[in-house]
Length: 211
Image (cartoon, rainbow, N blue to C red; front, side, top):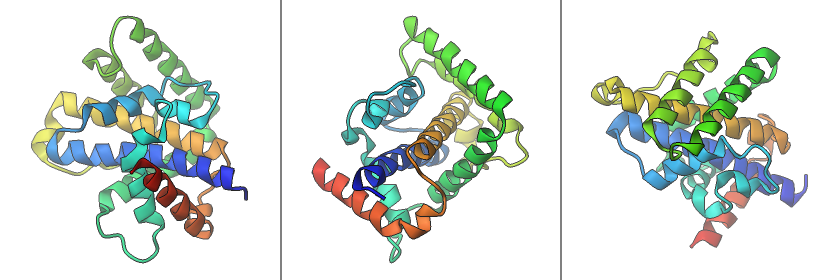
């Protein structure tokens, strides 16, 4: 497998894991970095990128959190600093992606819903509560109907807050988008085991470039 292919897969995985990381942060603290959140949300609307980095604001600089999480997953020695919840969310999303891919009706519904939300950008910024609420509703109407669901754990007070719940569902939708992107650039679940070292190296190189 080419180095370019591994690099693209690491970028897509970083997008997925960054969204999962933000889900965990919201569930436990009720807060996330505004720019990190914005990058994830806007990844939904970049549906015809010339380069994979276009999906994430045009630069791997925007995926530092995600690269760190993928590095933890693929390290093979120590996962110190990594949250089990982030790993659980991300691996659950990869499972859901495989189900969505086989359900063309749902895939089309998700795509149409994202296009509808994209039109709202003419009136609202990408983090506006109205747009986030609509993305949350789209997740509930589609992904949440599968028997397998992502069970988000954290501070009950935060999880009961509607705005936080909407943001979490919107981020889960973003992670699905990154999982689909990962598959489009050749990603497969078995590679998380057999290409672990190559993915780890790609993430380390990306993080070094960000220093």
